[in-house]
Every structure is written in C-alpha cells, then in structure tokens.
Image 1 (cartoon, one colour):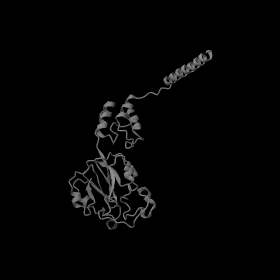
Image 2: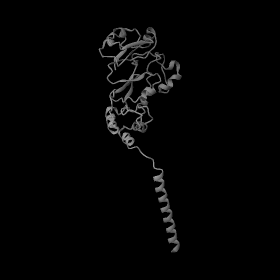
Image 3: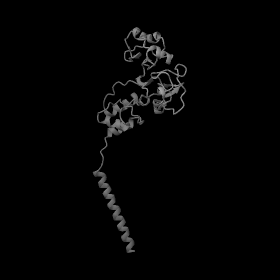
Length: 263
C-alpha cells in the first residue's frame, strides 16, 4: 500500500508542479491584445481578399488600430463596416465611394474576329504561350477563358459569349479580377460612373476595325464633342475620366463604333 501512496504523491506532485509552471509561464509570456484591434477584426467581413492592400482582415485590423490605415479602407464592407469601425475607433468614417470592376472590352463571339480555333488549357494566363497570345485577332481583347472568374470570391464576374462581364450589384471591388487579368483589361471605377469606353485596343483605326466590330478607332469624335472635357485619346484609344463625366450621353451618340457603353 505504501508503494501506491508514494506513486500517487509523486504523480500529484508532478501535476502540481506542471500546473504552477504553466500558470507562471502564462503570466510571464502573456501577449497583450489590443481590444480595439479585436473589435475591428470582428467588424470586418472576414473575406481575407486583400482588396484593402493588406494580406487579410487581421492585417487591416491591426493597421487600423495603430492608426496606419483608414477606417473605411475595406472595399468589401463598404459604408456599413466603415461606420462600425469608426465608432470603435472614435473617429469620423469620412466619405466612402463605392467602386466596381469594369472590363474594357465587348469583343464577344459575335463582334470579335478570330485567327484560329484554340483547344487547350482554359486559363487566360496560359495563353501568352500560344500564337498571337490567343485566338482572337485583337491582341488587346478579352481572351474569355475565365482567369478573372476563378479569382473572384463573390461570383460577380462571368464569361458571356467569350468576354468577361461584371455584375455590378455583386462586385465588392476587391481587385482580385484586376490582378488576374493578363491583358490588364479590368479596372476599378466608381459605381455611379455614367459611361466608359469598353475597348482597350491601341491599334490604328483600320487595323482595329478588321479585328472587332466595336473597337475604338481613336477618331476623337467623342473628345471633340464632350462638353465637360472628360475624354482623352491616347494611342488610338479613348478614355473617359469618371470624375469629369456629367453623364450627358453625347459621347455615346457621337461614337461611330459603339465603343462607349453605360458603365
């Protein structure tokens, strides 16, 4: 019996020692947690998309708590999340403008010409290894194999008849599709931008017209007729400044190739 008692005392003593050791270690090595950071992290949507410029929501929360990032820096959360975080931080949220992705191409199967039929891996990023960078005659147009679709976390972009199309209501402006597009056709524009040029071709007019029925030919009619001077033409391609555009619609009326669309 004495052996059993001794064994119990040894086991109990060891357990007590380990418990005391762990308790002291927990106090000594305790990591101080910023309560505001925790609260901000809980307010963020948790998508970890990286659209804010940080690796994930935890990185943004830490930056906001330290005053290194704006309270309205989360593009996914928008004004609702910005308001919650501003209350946590005790600051004004500031004005937040909703942004959405825009694909500067409308060269679908009916409008864009092709040089050959492509059969292979359906990933736009891989087509840089095939002749002409893809089967479409226009070297600047959407390849239509959905790298942007795969990258989107919100099911906000789909390939329709060979060209990517954004659902404005679902888009959270995280920027993943912008990064994924090898042709750099996608950009973030204000949700309320009236019109944009849906073409990225930099070819001269005659070449562009042979490649696509709705290609911008850089004729400059939109620029010359824009009353707010919101349009510039560079490299045979027109661009509309959404900050200057008043939505008068003159550019759409004057564009002979219908390259300008409602954004």
